[in-house]
Length: 186
Image 1: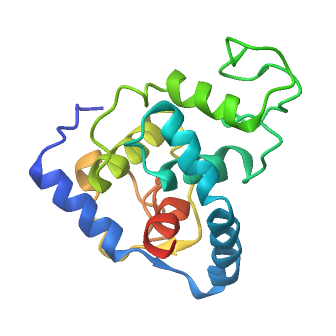
Image 2: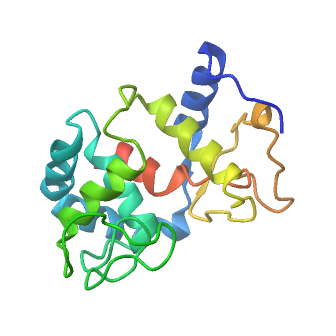
């Protein structure tokens, strides 16, 4: 796959993609339920960000938490393994310091550092979308279609993503849900 350049044009394209996403009416109750759970724990997500890099948006951590562990605070943010042991799935043997059982906050801090979030400075919406879409594609998640939104004017052709013939949502896109919901509705 050709290298994608993160430039002004691509930033504008991702903002257009984000702004055009609409939650399907058939998924509104599900999204509202997730948003409600996220809102109740906003202070936990903010505390996790503050422990590693106060610039990290709390909703970024909430989105990861929803994707990786279905918003459960009894499992590692890294991959959803139980906090009663170090992780056994990729990444294995995390957190590197401390002994089980771990708190969710300890695990979250380790996961954020493991992913390099403590060093990042650009937490703008286009950068979050670029990282989400690009990582999903590079991780081979191209067959994963989040069926909770539709984005009629997606414009992600520069990322060479194929489109599902029955869905206007581009393959490999994790962005519309829950990041879209977390950013726009919390």
